[in-house]
Length: 475
Image 1 (tube, one colour):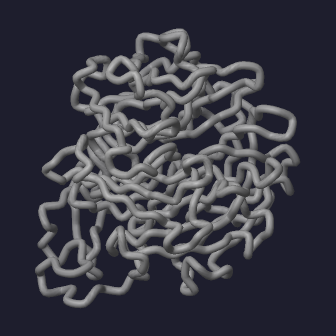
Image 2 (cartoon, one colour):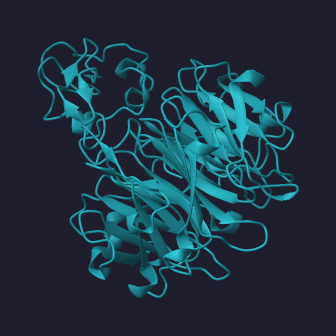
């Protein structure tokens, strides 16, 4: 993510570097000669200039090593002494900025991507993407740049989230269910952000006619997974891109229909990676449902084989655990906030213990931190999990919720805090997703009755550093 790409999302999420990707722990050819080559991350004392901050996440300290398999050894890397902001509910710790002041078209964003310096607001309505320089003043319009993606291709509109692989930014095609045109941005291109020359388009429907209408993406250290939602019908056709291949090369892409594993496996809204498994978050497949899909990235049968996937229906534990939107991972637990259910907007957050059996009821818990809040995304800042609310079923709300993972337990009311960001700006309602830059949490503006552009930001901690696995996904 911004650096030499260095953090294997697996290693950064509590696994070991040798667990990453398809390597299965085997040393690549040439490993041991003391010179980095091929797929090696390092070789002996040759670290390629990498540090703990580049190999794990920005802000990390310590001494980076190299394993005998020529993968980074991050055992001696650690976080700095950290001060978390006292008072999630204190307005002095919050700021708001209306990106529409930079461009009237900069409204209606669907989640965001962070690359280590810049925060990208993904256009969920229209084609104008906004970028914020996190090294500059948040409320200064000069810190923001906008670009109309229509200059790249006429189909570049209405995306739903994105991902960062350490080098490139990827935008997820939705287009109301009719678009399969994925975009990739190269931050190193000399032409800059606001140039079509820095962007590349690829139409996934050239690989498979059903490969369109995705919502969010997940990165596992090598592959980008596009989460299936609606392509004219609620569907389960997921796509995977190998970042080691050419973006415009059809052989770099694979598709697989999840509904061949479980007929309910359609209509997902986001996903997450825990260092080995990729999870797809169940939302609506014609009915609000709870069929979570999990991919074992170590399965020898591979992505496009039913045996690599496992389904679990959360309603077998809690009847009302359906209709989730987004997810976050804190190093052990997977959190899925409820967006809506058959009774209206939901209130629950479901939590899965990734150290326990996926299919066991005891591995899952739920909690309702507030009465009625339809969530839309979550993010982890190293201690707290923050959730954004979209609506309470009656009106659009500016509620944000924080869970303290060190606060005495998931079902402890004292571990949860609520803040109404609409007190900063009355338009700051109806948010879609959140992101973390190492110090601040951003809540993404989408729709409050009209498409809006008021970003809110919470100062979470000092100094700035990212948790392990920070670039695997943002919701």
